[in-house]
Image (cartoon, rainbow, N blue to C red; front, side):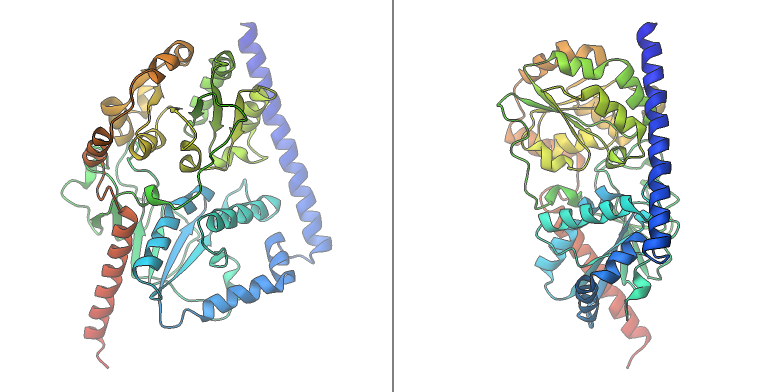
Length: 429
């Protein structure tokens, strides 16, 4: 009873502190914009006063004449990881034929806005592009566009989320799902699209796609994110203990439940291992009290590190096992790296999707939080998948297992080439 009461007080305290910090930041940002930036938004002020960046962006736009234009539109930072492999494959497979734009709508998210949080967001997008060997110049905020001359309309838009504020005109809209398998539910009706790049085979995809989906052409291209050309983090701790990755979903109830059941205490007790708490990027915001609860619980613990910004593929190379609850993270880790995954038990309301089907078919164990201390060493002692077993697993679940990035690039080229032919037949010169 005492522990539960302390936990509730701690949760309310961190939530209250987050609200106070949010109010303080918003007040400072508004005062700066009004009195220092002459009414301009933070990012617009910096864009105008770092003119070389604006000139480089304008030059990039001007170089696109005669090329097909592909827009990647997004709000969440992590979606950039889904687009980069396709961008790279387009450049490698069809050099000089396509111009790519990353257009973010992040400022429409309340926790980001147009102030300091958004400046940090832009820096993180640039970092991810540069770490992948790409320039950050093609990245634009949606409300920056009006400042540039001759900004093009897209021949195709790819997105992984429904964005209410997006109003571009295009003939081709592609839904690129942000998971290699799906959660419970049918094909999302809030995403405007007439093409779907399907990563997984049945039963690990949307159940209502069987037999087709009205108004949407389905293309079995696999999961391009698996082919990101990035540098893995080789060293997280300064010792050689096995590293365990904890990457939960974004469900508030499950996160708080895990904390309440003592998941951090479980990690503290397993001193023979190191742990990386890989939380969703949104939980790294100054406005997230849940992220602050995890930070407070793990503060000063030698064998625990908190990470909001790295993606799974950056961290996986130096980890031995993943602990998660539900969603695409567990299947992604298992399919990409062939390493063991522990799934934490979840309420039945979250079950029924491709993710929990994958868990039931291929997960190493499904356990409760208090069982981590006893089950983790036993699971790590088991033999890893052989190369042949790993390949068979991928073939059971995914389309285009080996080069999904190239499959996506080829499909984009086919769609836009066919569109050009049809347009020429309709409007002969």
